[in-house]
Length: 185
Image (tube, rainbow, N blue to C red; front, side):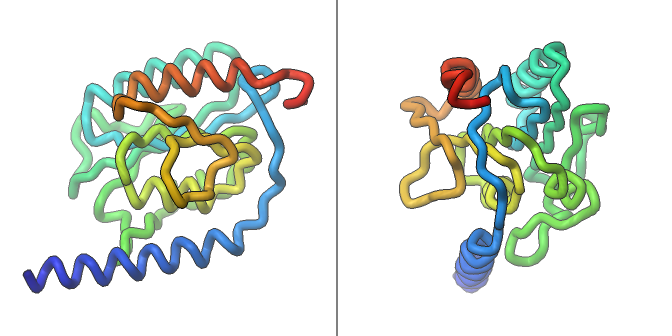
């Protein structure tokens, strides 16, 4: 019971810092679709190998269209496994990269946040605080993520009835191809 009390305090403090930092995130908002975007950042939960493979396929499809794509995955473990080797478009962070109230911190994260992406896509289907923090802190022009009530960090939220990563990726593809190209240019 004592440990849960401490975790609750850490969570509340993390939420407070997250909301405070959101207020100070001055970014240039701009609507983009897959046609107009030159750079795309992707955040996701990379703990499960099956989810990593789905995101990998999505990133590779985008990369083939000559986009500058970078995927940053959170691994909810103390150490990376052999599946989590950084590659050209893929980087990872894990539990040791979080401060005591779950704010992600390391040079990989700093580099990701400093990039001014045209589109940032959060592919987390669950409430992943470290990834949500990065989505909020990003300077990306157009942010896309799963619908969450009382959360205003995204420019476009996608309400998926089923919390399946494959469904979210499919919906992201659909809507980012559907956005009117005249309004997004």
